[in-house]
Length: 238
Image (cartoon, rainbow, N blue to C red; front, side, top):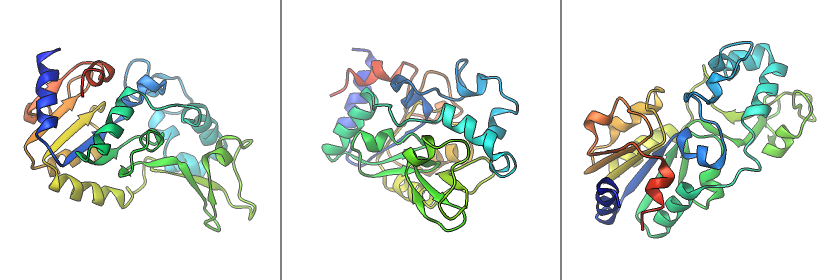
């Protein structure tokens, strides 16, 4: 076993209030594209820049094109959790993992069975009519033709945080969870998207671990940095 993975195992063994902060890299082993890698969503040729395709302005001004992009690229209905999601469920079952903070909107942590998941960028599994507030599930949206409309005539909007929108209350909960944690594992995120990446600064515990394919701006303050594929790390952990 790699020395760094051994060290990670030791840190997990001696910790009792672990918080995990996850990004798109956690879901790539399930077949979901990340955003910033060379094959990620942002590398696709689109009419507008990728950030604008997923912005509130795009939703408001060009809802048909927004939904075409959204349905083609963010549908995780038939996607299953991978080895990383399953390990985190096991860690929660042991009573060590207290909270998952995720930037992902794919719902895979919940599908894996984790209970305390803070989705700071929302989720595709919750949708509401902007006019009357009626709830709609993900199937209603992804299986709709064109723009999904409520029976009242209002447009249905996914409860995902689009560029230009405020973060949900889960963001404040995430700050509080980090302040109590004795270990923080950052998995599969470049830590460049603000304000999400600034959450790391709320952690004052003993072990800060960053596991990501590429370097991040926070590597220099981490106690352990592992630049290996996540599945290579988690298949070796107990």
